[in-house]
Length: 261
Image 1 (cartoon, rainbow, N blue to C red):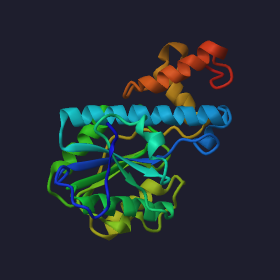
Image 2 (image 1 turned 180 degrees about the vertical axis):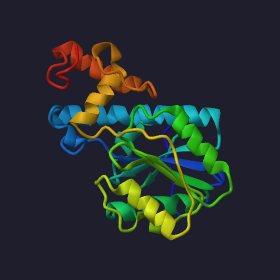
Image 3 (image 1 turned 30 degrees about the vertical axis):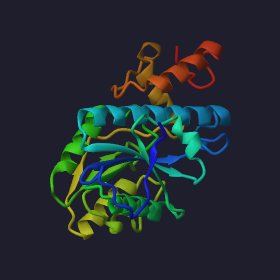
Image 4 (image 1 turned 45 degrees about the horizontal axis):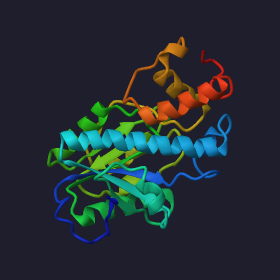
């Protein structure tokens, strides 16, 4: 069954008072996806691993929605016209809504406003770059957002950004005057929350996979038997692990993970 496409402003009784767990997605394409991983990956491999990240994040959110019907998985995607490419990457029961065609900050604001306009009682935007994001972090996020309190819940990432941000009311100021794509994003977001007297709750930190260093951290987490530097373990990321294992079978670890055994 194809994912339901949500239309901004069209009330949907099925999602009323539930929480949109929206994965921010740029449809994976060769030469345009995960370019900071090239090298060591080729453009084709980077697009392939981006698809795996999306499948694994979707699987974690699907598991959350099975346990807690309050949570609804939504693909917040771009570009328009790529719906067919995404359908096979999303779990059954996921919904889709298009991103607005704007700069990054206004794009996030637009996604939040559009999801609230459909009837969601809470909205969370989640990075598609954290395939091992622990189930417990998302579970804790949903639990906080169930409470009828006006506040922001943020999951900080190790690079100074955040892997998730959730709220029960739209607050555009949280996304204004932010130094996007820098290590100041999380700190500046907390500053904006303080400016508008909005309480902020921080979840446990995790990491995005967007460069060679974080790729090596992912490899150490997924293949602890191949490293002397074991990492804390999150979600299993089975699709990503299978993709990387096949690369090792074909050529060994040398090109993408010189320190791997």
